[in-house]
Amino acid sequence: MTRILAFSDLHHARDRAEALVAASASADLVIGAGDFCNMRTALPGAMNLLSGITAPFALVPGNAESFEELQEAAHAGWTVLHGSGAELAGLRLFGLGYGVPVTPFGAWSCDLDETTAERMLNDCDAADILVVHSPPKGVADVTSRGVSVGSTAIRAAVERIQPRLVLCGHIHDSWGVEGPIGDSRVVNLGPMVNWFEL
Image (cartoon, rainbow, N blue to C red; front, side, top):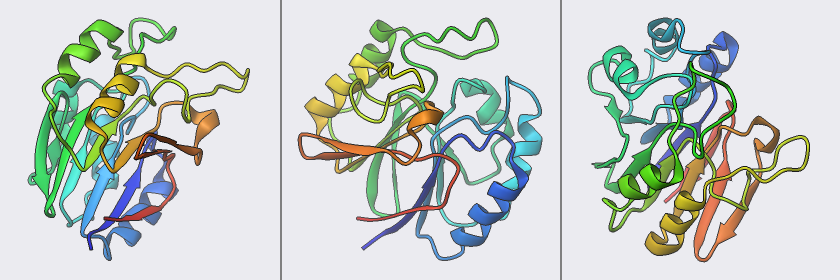
């Protein structure tokens, strides 16, 4: 059994990072589902807040940092996924970052349209865990105004692949919300200590 610590949307919060680093001491695998900093600023500092994580650590970029920025700021031994997969702690992971569909936040936000997201997700044939910044359409994707803003491309990929876990964030109003898509368990993480066992 692999003990997994997962979170999203840290947004450079020092107290949240300290709790995650402390918890990670008993994790076999750590997963960060994007938005480590705010509006593309001070990402290296946000990564330094997590430098105490020594377990295998998989990260996807949120819409607050680009793939290239996250690759550059990630510490040695960390695995950055974006339209790519890796095997860590005996589990198959596939990751896709960014806001999907395109957000209304403007030029700073790293986003993908549904067609591009679908194309990138088509590279995944199988996974135990799908790590995405944006939630799939219809699960854990509701804003404070009651609007479902998740991704149809991500939902289609979940339906096709049926990973055991789908870990996401992005929609702050749905932090802690989860639901099924077929046999897959979808969880919107938030910057809390979330534990899973696979």
